[in-house]
Length: 222
Ligand SMILES: *Cc1c(COP(=O)(O)O)cnc(C)c1O
Image (cartoon, rainbow, N blue to C red; front, side, top):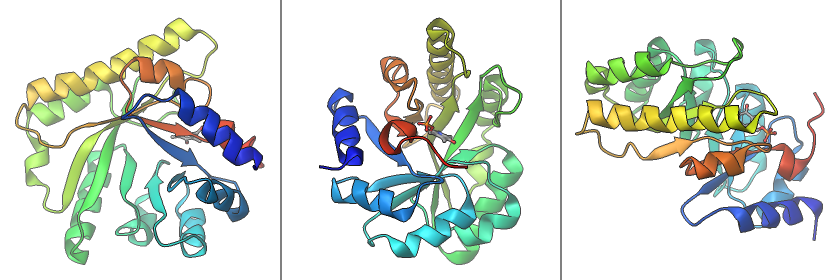
């Protein structure tokens, strides 16, 4: 058994039924992804478009990809139609561009809206109130080829587990507030939160999609 498959088995044994695992493979060579694939992992997360499109043809056809990084609009053309979920929609302008490009290509894009609750300025995303207001004003109704499947968020990068848990509760609460504001939303089911250091806290707060890299593949070589 490879280290990667041992890590995967250890993580999966802690995840409750109904929580999906994205193996975050950014900066790792395709050999590492193959090890995970051979251990049964089919869902991978990448954060750079260039790296993703290089890896796609090198992996078996039934590999599923999530895009999880900040998305520059000039890279969209390479991405649309190639991933099963874009987890990191952080502006309405980006959402509109995803939608028009998807419509143009005759595909439906599945996306998550990224919520910003962490203390760091460097993280992208909508503030909770801003996102709830957008759903309340029914901005999603004009989408033609995009399905918003839920939200994604990250906790503050800290050792303070109280703070991390509070951040996750705030993200989970944002999803509930959105559903209250737009009760007819359908398929708004995904709550993506939790990384290597904090996924147990995220799952405790209701996450059903965790994005784990380092704990599977080891440290990244930047
Ligand atoms: C890199 C990354 C992860 C995985 O981080 P690890 O700490 O290596 O598990 C998860 N989510 C996002 C958005 C990332 O960019």
